[in-house]
Image 1: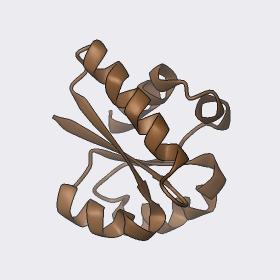
Image 2: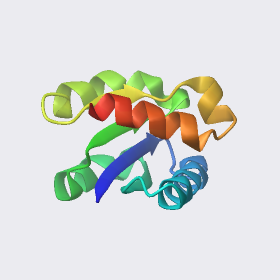
Image 3: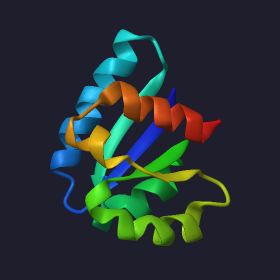
Image 4: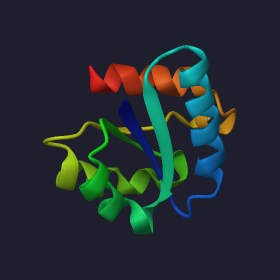
Length: 102
């Protein structure tokens, strides 16, 4: 199963979105597990899990360069579109993840 990792500041709102995306993936047999995590714990998680893509929440878009510089050569890093994040549009965000994974 492929892993989509969502990163935000504290891991709270992102956990709701990751659950919604995980349910969408399961319901549509997409084969993705979605995990939401706080920035403070993300690097250690990435080292152990090796996700297929790292998606950065809009409120921490300033972290994009940090993750792209450290992991971008091996793992795609993308920003989550603000409107999709705000409306918790699981379908759109999973679509962006699939596109980012290529």
